[in-house]
Length: 174
Image (cartoon, rainbow, N blue to C red):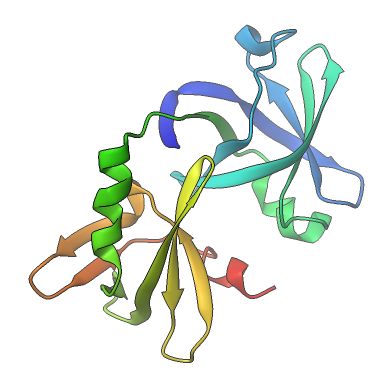
């Protein structure tokens, strides 16, 4: 899955109910023309964060109701109000997939030089590759493999410096 900031689906206008649904006010071009989607990017603090869709319901007009996998309460999604929602594009080649495998064993550092952990696996999910990282506390966390999150890669020292959106690591600890 690739992030295309040119394909704006709409903006999250409000929460719907208490089970984690959001209402997206669609851009003009998508009214009555909703594409098939498995995932979207939500722009959080100016950065694209991928989300898998568990349910969509077109309400008519410019309203689309959407639920995301792993978000079953309104508490988890309340911070998304006002965020822009972008479509994803699937344009990866087999070479790109194989290139990511070299990251296994790399140490992951955050921008503030804290050690996040070591990459143990690159999970190839439909729409989004994920880095499985084992923390120093022996906890597994999943981080979307996205070029906007990678600040620096040093192949010689086998380290990756990542600039992750605030709260992304905490999403792994429900």
